[in-house]
Amino acid sequence: MGIKILQQSKSQKQKAEAYVFFAKAADMGNLKAMEKMADALLFGNFGMQNITAAIQLYESLAKEGSYKAQNALGFLSSYGIGMEYDQAKALIYYTFGSAGGSMMSQMILGYRYLSGINVLQNCEVALNHYKKVADYIADKLEKSEGIPVEKVRLTERPENLSSNSEILDWDIYQYYKFLAERGDVQIQVSLGQLHLIGRKGLDQDYYKALYYFLKAAKAGSANAMAFIGKMYLEGNAAAPQNNATAFKYFSMAASKGNAIGLHGLGLLYFYGKGVPVNYAEALKYFQKAAEKGWPNAQFQLGFMYYSGSGVWKDYKLAFKYFYLASQSGQPLAIYYLAEMYATGTGVLRSCRTAVELYKGVCELGHWAEKFLTAYFAYKDGDIDSSLVQYALLAEMGYEVAQSNSAFILESKKAKILEKEKMFPMALLLWNRAAIQGNAFARVKIGDYHYYGYGTKKDYQTAATHYSIAADKYHSAQAMFNLAYMYEHGLGIAKDIHLARRLYDMAAQTSSDAHIPVFFALMKLETVHLLRDILFFNFTMRWKWMKLDNTLGPYWDLFVIGLIVAVLIFLLRNRYG
Image (cartoon, rainbow, N blue to C red):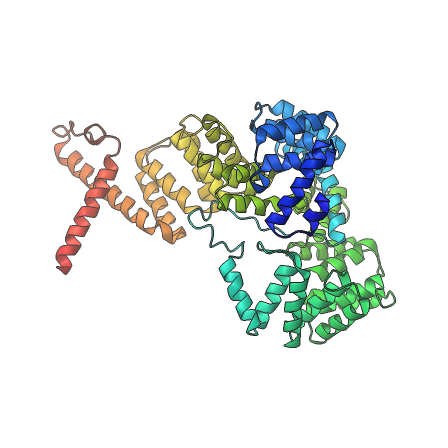
């Protein structure tokens, strides 16, 4: 009953009712219900967070051989949440979890072997783990069960998370609905698509999707016709599976030269749905759609050449089309590219490339839904629930989750970790995010070493990380910080010319840096002018005037204040 309610319900209130049934079944000793309850207690579903109670449930489940419980205990041990921080123990739990069939444990182990986290780095072992998960995901994707999930970066908009382009704001959604009702065809198609797959925080709703597509199709939208065809081809509650209706709508769209319609007709001929199987016709339609840049058609062409369906096997051509489709993020194309790199089929074998591609496919798993629940928990001020969800995703190797977890930890708002553990754990997560190419995280590591957060103060290491962020990612913040360090000779040899150059580069790279750079350069030039005068005229007499001793370590801020005051005074007099 609980599972049935959970699958059919849309509102949080209805979903909460399911947990009443789970609680009753768990009391009677049902393992699946106990797993559901333990998850709810750990992740704080419906305000139920109680980590101590969750651990008790997981421990009793683990004794029964529950792989979900073993995975959860591994995760809690690896962070020291409610349990002792113990990486060796975490590894044992993950190993048992993956042996029992936990896809999450497989993915975590894949990431650990890829990155060498508490194990020796081993690409082949990582490949083995990631491939098992990717095979499972690809099978789901072939049945059209893919879940595109918005991954909101908390670091990018801490001040105003509500105006998030990844999640559709309620007011904006109402405005879109208004425009759609007024006959805006593009908005009708967009709302139809959002409801068809449940994106940007909207519920999947086939009836609403069909409603908007039909409105747009009546107005002559070829895209809408093609999407109606897609709905009838796949079949759902609003549009029961019907090959003839699918053919009709695909043909209408294709006659207008629509790529999705052409691809749809190709699929009908390829699989013989409502028409006899005809590979030559399928190939013709796929080629037309692929020429228009439709990634699904590019993938189908690749698949035909890869499997030799109606054409001679040609791995070079298969690779070409898979690669084209993968550039638009077509998940199955990425999966087949990974297969080719893993086995060296039609391309030089590369374990590293295969793992990176498999990892991308694995990150499309249903667990990625936690990105949305974690984001909404954060927005609602439920920081602990948000952190646990992001931290689990971070453990699975999601870079966005690593930086989000670190961001929450450094805010010190979470209560589930001891205060003194927060900065070291945040530094560890920033490190993992930086290794995966996050420039902001790289600057953060520099900051942590510069100020001594969660580690010893180390200007040299800070400068190294700022240099990487400046050289590799052209980060204006890193350039500015590095310029300051060169100006003051912190951890690197003092070099005024290089400091000037880096300040200028920061201003050129980001318009946000103009004002800080202006003041920094004003201060630098003023101080050096003063120093030159003092050194030139009064070297001995002015020896007592050591600025750091007289005005304290923040004398440079005092000078900036003085410059600002003089500028305001001059401007007032000018316009007075």
